[in-house]
Image (tube, rainbow, N blue to C red):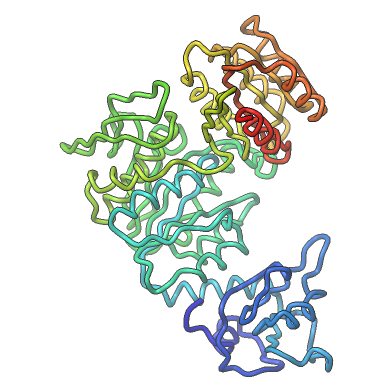
Length: 461
């Protein structure tokens, strides 16, 4: 945070300064007591298992400048250091601070949401914009009701534009986040089935995603995936400009002459009479779509498609998301960070283009948060897996039994199923051969990232 004093936090939260100096500067916001440093604001969140208030003495000893509290009306004698602000609810107070800090910013903000691909799209937009602007982007996965206020707090005076990710896992959450962020431009990547367990249906997910407009500024812009069956006919609210990107002829920003063969994607971006050759640093049709969203954002911020193309070249993905590791023994596609049916299919489509002629081994683990259709979705991915022509399928998890059945319903491809990760690793150690291409893909909680790391290291030994 820049130029923020304790008294500003009191004003933002409507709280009561129990103790301390209102003129003290505050450096950063921290929720994790272990990360608190001198000059920080500590916000104790009350969780299901842990109440952050218990760590207040610890953070003050570490040099915290100020703490929020909803459990103290007086400061304990042994803790009279720093500043204490009494609020009714620490989580709500953190959000109030986010709104207060956003109101002080003058730079435009681009908000990215969607069921799949939010983080990659955010990164590609930021890369494209960086060809002309100093860009701030959401660090890591700080896209929640408590993450977005912290994201807002870290934007500096030197930043010229911001790209922030807006997440959602329960009804009403995106409205809260959007009203904190007050974005100028909203990008919706797709309407999938991630979090369908909590929201019940794609229609409900669509309704929730559209609440991103609850925080969209007047005369804002909506940039939508024109190939998504639930977004292609969607219009922004009154006063909002709607732009579509995709492969359909009705899209404002389109991709033609797409080349996805054994390497980074190449295509021609088309907007009206303008055409621009684009060469990405990442693979896959889904990244062509992400790049189109980025080009649309750049255009709306006064950039040419040529400038956007230069920025896009600088993006080469990041750990656990379709990272290719060409070792001496194996070529590994590490896409282990997370998984949904759409991202599974996209990953398999990229995988089949790698190293033609090699044996392709797909190591696939359970997809989580799919509700009562979990078997149906896994079976569907199994069918898709078989149709890509992989040579061997190795699965991990109970739900992946349905994926295995889907594979077997289409083709006579060897399928080896495991419930135990260590047993699966032992099998792969014994059966992978030099020259193999190996894909690792599954929900983060299934732990495939460690498995991928093991074989990346082994491949170079």
